[in-house]
Picture 1 (cartoon, chains in turn cyan, red):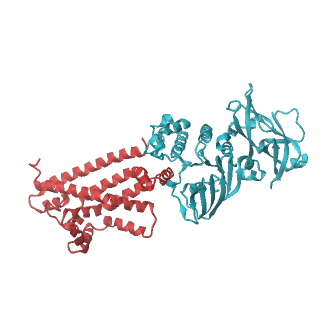
Picture 2: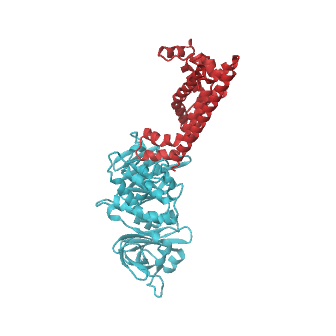
Length: 371
Length: 231
């Protein structure tokens, strides 16, 4: 296990009791505001002292209440990218970047990290003159250059608008794929989590509501309410097969082909595609005369009725899991039961560009790692 | 210049500059330490410490000087002990520096406390996560960011020290060449017939020093502020 956390901490009237283990790769901590996300990250970084418990990184004990181990933040070797950047205003970008770099650090590291994050031209600037997106990239570079054993990112994109987010997300994907550094990524934005994470921890009221591999957590009907009815959706691994001349791209999943609006990735590249549960329509027979381009043969795995009029149906296509939000009335009218073979209909245009991200699985999950 | 500026007057000016400079430099670390305690720490007796620091500001200076005399006078145990280790204070210029430093302390602490409070503690936390131990955080983050306020406090303290009169004359008297600082000299010249001209000249010097100190502090503070804001 890369990171093992088992801690409790009282915060005013609120009890934090969190226990999970994160494998290598990107672990996303997802939860509403007030769920305890930032407190958890601060505890891992050494900025918040748990009342009880243990935190270990790569087997190295950072905190253990029973043995009295409590490494101070400056000795934990955890790079922390804060939501608000926190660049040092009196230092140039270059000196910010090098602030945490060990004296014996490779002199070429600065240039490499600056190139990775596309900030080479900013080195002599002062932080005050940077845009929000540039500041966040410098903050990420600064954390990287401190040669951490893990990167903590607390909503690094939350202060940015949608356009800037879409610009920075590819940098984070590059970071994940090119450095192989374990990343602990806190967010309440499901598209970010779906694009980046291979492990998801959902926090609810200071405790772990669900945790596991991203594909399983997102495809579990029990988590739909936790993720938000509007946002819930499964993540599929896909590969680009062909770019069609009419602006559409054809992707291959384990059991089907998907036609989506043009994706910015060359043929052959591995991607993750998030398909929102509310965008999936179910049909008991192969539909004809339908505008939707994607009709996937699927098997019903589980049907979970909610308290309201809705139900969530988990579906299997190849080895991929999908979820669909339908009404209880439809479940009854179609007579859906686990094991039934049905068709899942997905409109191409319902999959937004933000829902498609680089998969990057090979480097984040070293051979033999359990995810 | 010496034509119109007598040796006695020069002596007073030189002594005052020395006393004020030593007082400011010696008080600076103490004031910063107290300001840091008051700005960043919570402890039992914090308000008592705050009151004690501010006492010299609100007490009549004569009372402060009398207090110093009781503590550090030639017959007081503390005074004798310091004299034994080669630091006599009573009726010496060092005593004048102590009196000036005590009087300057509250002003310096107030300015520095405000400066430290404006330093974003989250930046210090960020520095710690980058591997910086507390001493390095202090030197590279806290101190540079608090510098404008620290500097302003030091200049304020210097101005107060150079003008200190009541506590100084009570504690170390008014001995020419040893404890007769600029304010004491002005006071003395005003007491003797025909001393008006000297008093006026010294007053002019006092105005010049004060104005220069203010200009310097403005320039330094503006420069430090530009740096802190990253411009």
